[in-house]
Image (tube, rainbow, N blue to C red; front, top):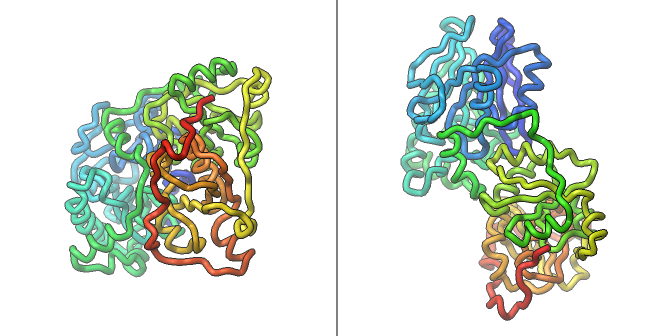
Amino acid sequence: MVTPAQVQLHAVVDEGLGNSSYLLDLGDGSALVVDPPRDLRAVLARARAEGLRIRFAADTHLHADFLTGAVQLAHDEQATVLASAAGARRFPHRGLRDGDEVDLGGLGLTALATPGHTDEHLSFLISDGARPVGVFTGGSLIVGSAARPDLLGPDRTDELARAQFASLRRLAALPGPTAVWPTHGAGSFCSAPPGAQRTSTVAHELATNPLLAVGEEQRFVDALLGSLGSYPAYFRRLGEINRRGPAVLDTASVGALAPLSAPEVRRLCAGGATLVDVRPVADYAAAHVPGALSLALRPQFATWLGWVAPPDGAVVVVRNPDQDPADIVWPALNIGVERIEGELAGGLDAWTAAGYGTVGIRVLRPDHLDGEAVHVLDVRQSAEYTAGHLPAAHHVELGTLADRAAELALGPTAAMCGHGERAATAASLLERAGHRDLAVVTGGPQDWADTTGRALVTGPDADPGPPAQDPAARGGGKAHP
């Protein structure tokens, strides 16, 4: 991480959401935390390890991809919340405007208006006396790119892209050695495609960031918008929740899952709850509750939960005994999934002991596909698909599959992604929509190419995707436990 020697800065990276929070040691036993998530476990653990009390919590913008932890820190740590006055937040905070300064004790913070990712976006310049040290750029200048300007809707996108052009140039005018500490980075759906590094310097970005090399506004707008892919549907809800302020949690009680009997789970699911199976793909494929949504517990769990599960619906969990409930509940709360009713007590064994049936799904290695009479459904993001896919593959992004599954006429289908987790989610969505004869491919297109010696197809398809069919012709309906 790029950190000037005289500044003690600790990055806390969320690999799943692709974000960094920062803990800045203020030299007196206290700290400033920038863009803390609602799931504060890692931030607080790092603060305790460093012997720091969090005195300030600063949000660069109204986040769309996670709920802020600033409200919780104000409650639990009596931290002062610093945020844009233009954000009209409805909870106690110190509203900052362009040029406002905050004395952190030895270091100074200056608010810089840098709209573009959002319209109230601030960057926070940290100075030692008159000398700039580093700048928390949030969702403005990021390593190798800039954060996306389309989260406030298509009617605002062009305006915000032009604001991002001006904001990046304002930040690029800072002294070259100034460290750049973005919030969004590799893996974040808030970002245009960034590099692997999460921090940088102004000088390095001027030398390497292609968007800073574009001096004409319209060309910048075209380049930025041309790099954008899809983003999770829950992004459209969280900004307003962050404006109001997430509810303060009783953190001592968060992390447990209420035990539910198999009949209780069956009743809840019949009433519309989503049964989320967080077990590894192999376990889900071997046997699962009919209609369960497969979302293997991994760093990206929360993103896909928020993307494919019904918004604001109740959730019931199926897990293995070695999977920590806190690692399910906290990520869900982090992206605004509040209605977690509990878990199937005793897991799948309890389900079968109650006399309820299970179903399985075939698992195929990539090199087995050539001997199978199946359609390959590639559910990766469009940029991944165009970079290389199987010659006969159909393409539907996983994030759109829930809305399209009932209308797709696929026949025997093998779902494929890069490793298998998204493919299992896709297969579970298809099963919930009534499809049968499904398989999950445990590996991606490159594995297929490596083992078969055949070439992948690159570029977009002329094929618009799997055909639609009258649901009545397919047979079956939505599966329920």
